[in-house]
Image 1 (cartoon, rainbow, N blue to C red):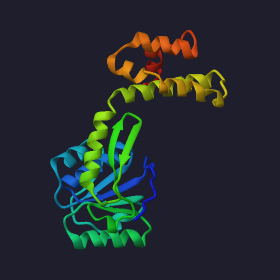
Image 2: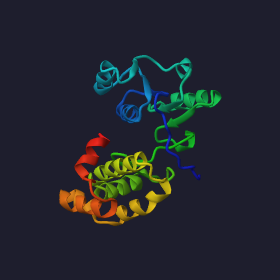
Image 3: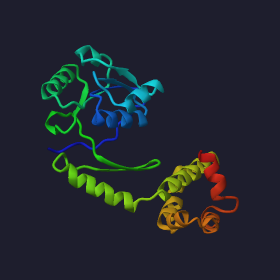
Image 4: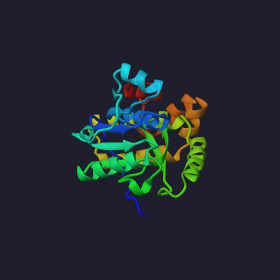
Length: 221
């Protein structure tokens, strides 16, 4: 199986999770984190899901799944240990042309979920095409050690620089050498070590006077 790698915009879209255990809870939280309008349907649910419902982070339906739950849904995730129910969810979703993922059953999925490392706006994903979740997990752990929190700050800084350059009417094609110099510099190590004076010196060298990291980061928040 060759999967087409994409990153999906689910902001404001209705997402259904069937199953209220630990797996369903993790899937619901990941959808919420990406801006999805999440509904969880399950007779039994975790305390964490109840808390999220009380906080209006999701809609909780404590009952059995019904095909009508799929009306108006963009995607559905099945997270139950009932194989017959999982197959039913898959069949219903297919008839309604709704994207479907069944936990631990890649053969029943329209899409599978990669292992994810996230540092702010940096998202690194690892997939073994469903062959070995254990290897994907190991690679994710390796990447977590490689990509630290300095990448969050660096991307915030790069975004703020780009925004200011565009506001000053710089042509976008002029930005490429600027960002390439920043990426190839030691700025990530300096961010990690808190060496702001070196960062400011580099910004002045590349961009000119009046460019300071703290000022730029303040505008990115």
